[in-house]
Length: 347
Image (cartoon, rainbow, N blue to C red; front, top):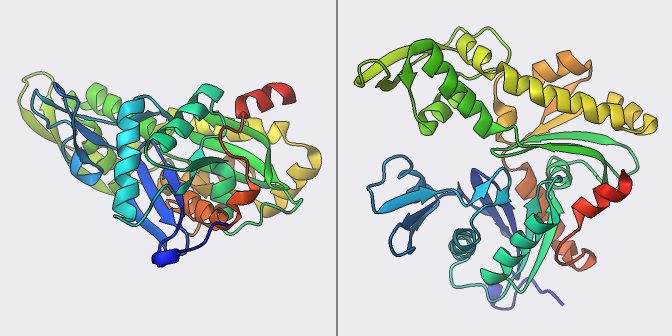
């Protein structure tokens, strides 16, 4: 029996393992940690030097013998060794010295392959978990936003993360129709970098692009706000500053935003009529950090003709849903979910 705690500690942990950030929740204690999924590694020895926020500060600034890396790309693990070290470090940060072989619930994109599923499970086990359980991000996001996913009514969730965008219609505790894109927050940053390079002849880094996106970025709206941006001039090679407006970011983000809109329309077309009618009533739920981009709800509402709502806590919605699932881990399947095989059977 999984007890809350002899000695006052929990034996069940939830981890929203995202491309850009990781959130960790402990049963009975809430979300205890939210840090960037970045690891600083010694290039020569492979030793892990920093994890999380401290490592993120090194992005683009490391000397030759150090490298700051993200062990997850497009929602899946790209470097198993570094990912294991990161998961282990975050587990200890969330509950230092308190946990011995916890049961770990991890969120995964709905479009994950079986190989990628196994990599997540293996990373959790190697990091010290006794058992590893997986949960699809759209289901966790809906649950974290206060939706009872066990009911037969259909609900559409659009979870825009850093590496992936999950679009899904959920009912009766499962995903009925979905698609998973590698078009998400990182692609918005890259689109802005390319726009500034082509339009202003200025090279900016990923961190600067993210700061601009958060400060004045939009996909719809008036765009009257401006922001001074510094980078390296492509002509002279010297530092230079330009002023960007919200309207310019809208122009830069348009292709990426349209890809997400098209994915939402595609899932709606593949949704059974009864559930589509439910979605028409309940509307579209937006979660994830990318949903905070100004005008995203307005754009989706305009393009689909359906009411679009932003979750109360979009960034933490997945982690909150995972935390709510922790008391029911014994009812869940341990290990891989074979999501890729299920999709093939459905087709």
